[in-house]
Length: 220
Picture (tube, rainbow, N blue to C red):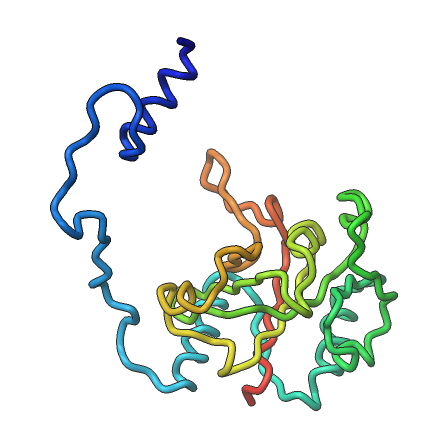
């Protein structure tokens, strides 16, 4: 009997799947149930208050927050890209075409064969999102239409994320988890990428975009 057989046998016994040796005694009925009696949301808020809380937490994380309506969105996106000096913008499939109708940078499609070096050469990326969480200031992307592959929001240095409000905003993480599909490639973003060195100096852009612009679409 190899060491591998011994380890797997112990795993099977722990799971109650039989095999040599004593089996664990069954626990009381319902012992495997995990209590879910924590608060699903902290406090009562109107939809507008929830959006305001999201905006406040995004700003606290050093994201730049903008509010606009559908008609003004193309001009706002064009302005954000121009202020960034972007010459190229990565466009995921499914992104509404009119969003970037006024943008001057060359559009780069989201291709499976694109290398990390090629993505790093892109100036900006514009995406939608799956959800935004007010209590934590978190954006969640799941690779759906208008979001593209996970890597396109991790390599370019500038990410513009459009959140439809109030429809895509939830109060808390538990409420977000209940709506998300765990089988999808979920990316959770709380502000621009940042870390601290040994001297506790904040360094941005290490694990993702250095600059995050969040557009709250529908909030005026």
